[in-house]
Length: 465
Ligand code: 5AD
Ligand code: SF4
Image (cartoon, rainbow, N blue to C red; front, side):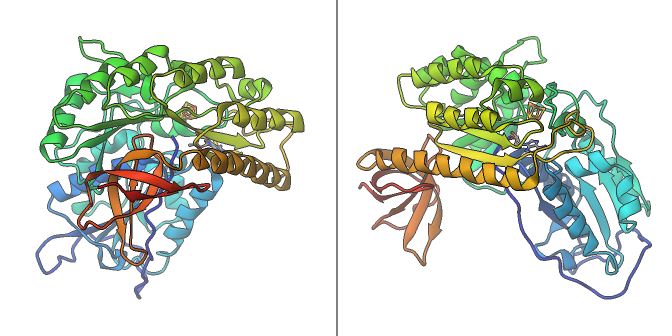
């Protein structure tokens, strides 16, 4: 897990309260039922939404940008922290008196976590489905279309993964492929094993076929996804490990960049570094969440590694032939975290020199073993530690990004800011680079950019023609 995205939108209001859910009936001018889907949370969710959209498009639905115009309004939700869950309930609350015959559905982690409770809190909702049950979505939709009032998909015992015939790709530059779903770890703070169920890997031939289809469609960058992507175990007779799949995806004709996220330190081995070293298409970036720099806290979090073992893996990465950027997730204020434990996290930042970190204050979650742990850290102290952590990391980024001035990176261009006269893209090390160019139409192109200025978060440069 790592980067979090929210596709923000305004929920428009209509008049006329309705607590009954007639079958989807308001057929739009083109004769198709319409849907609106908003996504909260991680890249896994963002990609699940692409697949859910694919299922809906395959059933003849049409996507709309405005929920007020949709027959079916879906929220693909996150429950990793309390705030994420609150945001979803606030969205649902917007429909309290104005659902107006629409079908409102809750998908994803909050759906799995709260289950039928959602109907209690928001009786105007008629679909609740967790990600481990998405294979059942067509069947659930058929029930709704036939006038079903409340349908649920909450089983976790599925040992299959979510395969779709069509996946609507929202990102035209980078394509995602889920290779493993669920999680078999039991980090004491984390809801994911409960919301996404046990680990299930996809067969390697299915993954490779999807990579080839993406390459044929013109994609050059692929990101392999999984909550613990490097725990991948091929269920087919080939019995590939993660590193085998990584090399094979990188060898697909037409693919120039392969990324993967999120790696669990426990399953991160030296062979992954060798593979990156030997395979130019494997991006020089590893997201390796440490969560804490204190052994005491790591034990309480049930992370399964010590600080020293983690630092050993960082050494392998630092010893690679080409520089590999390293990023992390960190939680501050875990129950019982002392000033000294927190100091250990700060010194770990100094030792590793991360390119960037995603930092969070600990949030107690239902169905986790840390929820009732004693010695909660007061909210005010958590916020203070978060600010201190971010300031330390900011200084590290300023110093390191400054050293990049004069270096040249290959950038895959993914945005243009006309007002600023700038282009934006990512280097293979996943650095965000803003740059100027005298050329036009650079979207989707690989260009050389010389860095002219460092900065804490993104660096600036100019196109080298
Ligand atoms: N409180 C705060 N942060 C959390 N994360 C996961 N669970 C919690 C929680 N209960 C963070 C971890 C994880 C990232 C995606 O979210 O750092 O790696
Ligand atoms: Fe959550 Fe830990 Fe699994 Fe990551 S490895 S999804 S933090 S339980």
